[in-house]
Image (tube, rainbow, N blue to C red; front, side):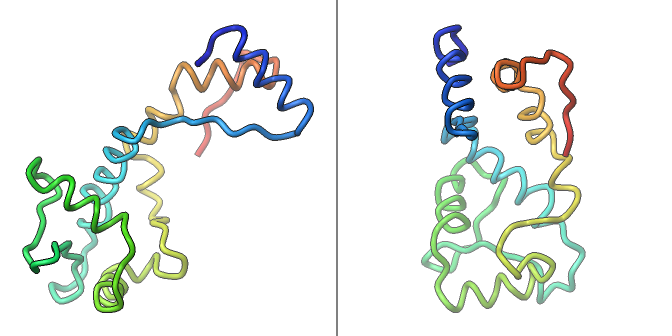
Length: 140
């Protein structure tokens, strides 16, 4: 909500607390970004076949990140808790990121969905209200 009243409330909260939390993404958009990261980065790693990540449902069927029919199951697996076996499997193919679980491959920061967040007009309005400046820069 970037109404004048809400922006005023955000600014006042920032001045008083020194920090504000703003919900940037709705759940569906967040899910789209998770799938984009898997599709464009994690499943594109150039590992040997035995180390390539495969996302499977509870029956062992490999899920297709590009299939609308597999979308919910795919998200459930990659966002949910991993059992010991699946975690070990993922660690073999996610070796660059297994230290803390987040994908830090530089290409992640340049995915179209991530750039769209940086350029979101609502986020710009909030940042302008917080900083009192209109000449803001987008950075990674």
